[in-house]
Length: 346
Image (cartoon, rainbow, N blue to C red):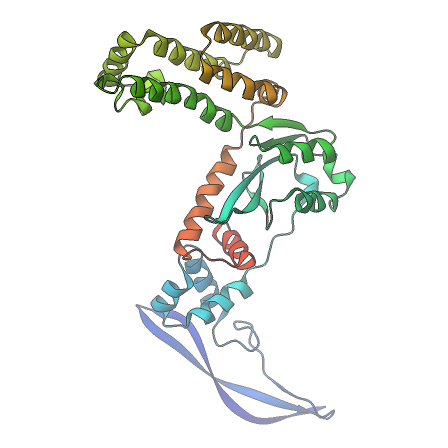
């Protein structure tokens, strides 16, 4: 049995109306149980112990996804710490359904600039959703993370796409027995572009008074089909002065074109081998450096012709993380940053 005790007032913040603050004044019943326990009336639109409605909390959470807590606090006349607590209470981490994940992209992100403090991003390459963020990039930490998944889950992963960082590829080969390892096309393309750019720099050093090598970097890197007439004219002037630069430029474009066309895997390997043979004949040190890099990662790069996947979604997520770091004023607490990322990504 229980009996009523006197009511008390409770002020609850609700959604603003026309920019004006709305406060609900509730008369709350208290009850006294024969067991000696006293308890209060509950309402389904407000959580116990909170001073705001559930829909107000949801609105604050949605605002905070793309703004700092300080900005949201100023807009809503709430203390930034209240906004922060509200958001973290609202956020429930999704359970990772590893049984459905077959293709994974992995990359690092500089969490604290200048400190070599990297975190690791895992992306589902089928859904482009963030799987998880790992606080450390060291090999032992990543191994422990994947080992706790168990062999049953690891054996279901069919593809793993990463950059050229060796520990990523070593761990995948060790822990994911059925996964094809892919070196993302973007990363080796960066090195291929450096071939023509480094050779341009050399020619400019050797010909300081020659203007044709100035402002040429992006014209050499851009796809030929994306060049305007004036850019083509500038390139031709440089090629007339240094025919070797044109040969290196054409080699870059040829290598990229091999990856653009869906040739059969065996035919592609023959084309790559012919390209390497031709590149050696040019005896350009920058081309030779790229060939050495390619040969070290040859198998994983050429897996692109078995299944054409890339970690473009991972690079997009890196941009998302940089955006969040910027509007949170370089938040340094990893767990809070992780919550913010998932909130933004909902």
